[in-house]
Image (cartoon, rainbow, N blue to C red; front, side, top):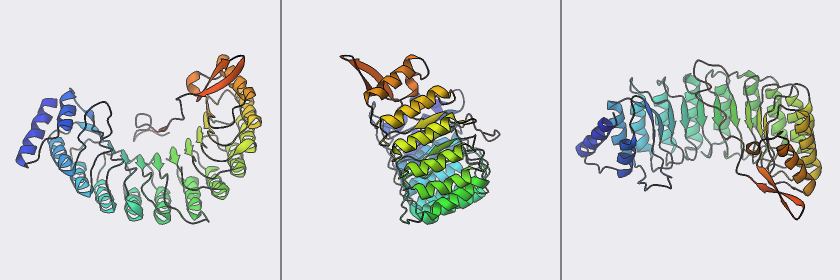
Length: 396
């Protein structure tokens, strides 16, 4: 099969007078599939020479894949694909024999018209489950096309629109579309361009969360969320029974926002992962979280409070909560004030096997009888959602 794809690729290049891309040929020749397979043509490979894909490369690649519908996962992020290349991909997705389940177009040069073309093609597509567009400046209008897609498509399960220059109008439209969408499991709208201080968008997302029963993972990082917006979100989360991962990293949440979150956690027994990295919850916020962790029925399993200006008082409260509740298995605290009492407490948690070394982002060491913590490479899982776990016929 790999030889056939390479042959088709060379033939189409010759027919269209397009120079073959050695990177594409190399990857295709490495494939030795017996049936369906994933094709990764990332433009940011460090361990091999890469010629980033252009729109012409996408044209020839799509024509080859139309002849042999064997690719289920297409990863072409960090390339030079523009709106013209999206036209070719749209044709591939509209083929009746298309088997592409995941399409990663992150960090290309796709703009509004490309998002519109992609949205139109997916309104009649029933195979694509995951679409990643992060890092493409599709803007407010392009994101509105994605919202209209969610009103029609009942197959797509994952949509990433991080760093796509979304505005208040499109962020609100996405929330409204998700009220009645029965399929989407994961959405990422991190780093939109929101300039309102009233956080009206949070009210719409709260209303959506109260009604939606399919969403598993929600990324709201770098949205400028404040305590007011957090309070609005928790109103909806009290009635939500599907969301398991809430990402609020890099916002303006303080102890008051965490207080609203912890009150919600006592009622919501579904949330398992919360990312509060790079906020400003400080000691009082950490103590609120500690109380919630030890409360009966708390289902939280993973928590990140990195870089939150938490000192010894708050961090020790968290370690005591971990000892009292075995449900929480992962915690990440680097970037706070790690004084020696905290270092000793985390060393004890690891040495007693209450925390496994890969379940936290700190590692203890001792110098001249004094205990310190070094940063470990472990971090909160970026993608909790998985197509294998949540297929179209399974419920979270």
